[in-house]
Image (tube, rainbow, N blue to C red; front, side, top):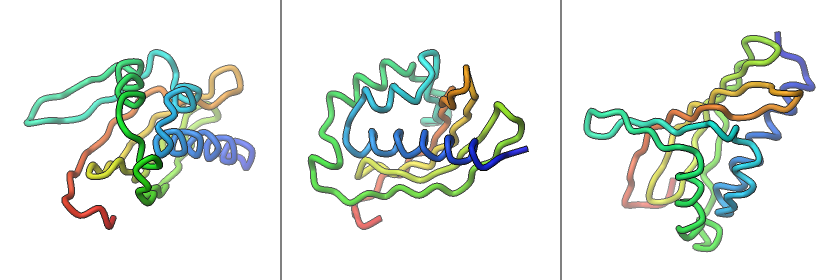
Length: 130
C-alpha cells in the first residue's frame, strides 16, 4: 500500500525527529509529534507514560548530544506502511549514555505524516562507542 511519496515523507519526518533529538531542538521534535502523542516505556515492571510536552521540557533542559560533541547513533531499521494513512517505524537512536530502540506509530493527518505514539526501550551503557 506504500508509495514513493509517502515513503519519502515518512523518512523526512523521521529525519526531523532524529535531527531534533541530536540537536536538542524541542521545537523541531514538536513539529513532527502530534500534540496528543505520548511516550511509553517499561521500568521495573511498570508501564511509564510521558506526555509529549513533558518530554519536550526535558529535551530543552538537558545538554544535547551535539553540544557535548557526541557522535550520532541514528539508524532506521524498518518502515512499514500498512495503509495509506498508517505507518510504523522502528529505529535506533541515542542520547548517551542512554541508547534507545523506538517504535513509532505514525498517522497521515491532513496530508502530513505525524508521530502519534512512541514506545521505546532504553539501554544504559558506560561506553559511548555505540
